[in-house]
Image 1 (cartoon, one colour):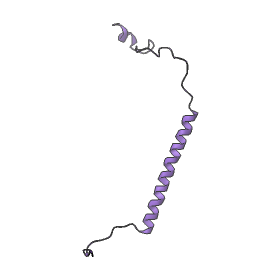
Image 2 (image 1 turned 120 degrees about the horizontal axis):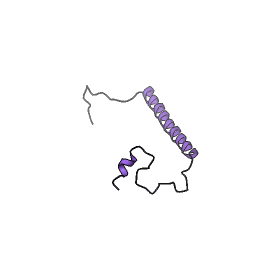
Image 3 (image 1 turned 90 degrees about the vertical axis):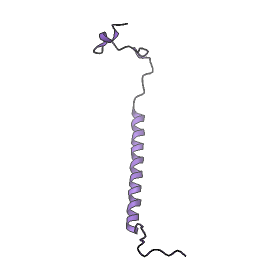
Image 4 (image 1 turned 180 degrees about the vertical axis):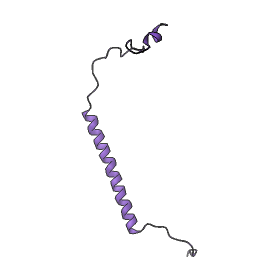
Length: 76
């Protein structure tokens, strides 16, 4: 038999607090599911990348149209 010290208090949530925590948990889960669903719909609507090779796709050089390209490519 365990005898509790007289100043020991049981820390537990009351019924109203427990219900509030359950409701908050359900709202958080519903929000996460809604964000996931919305993100999947946005990704599905996004246009696919071009299938044809793009000009300069295999190049590591700075494109000639960018500022400072002449300075970077002079030493080559």
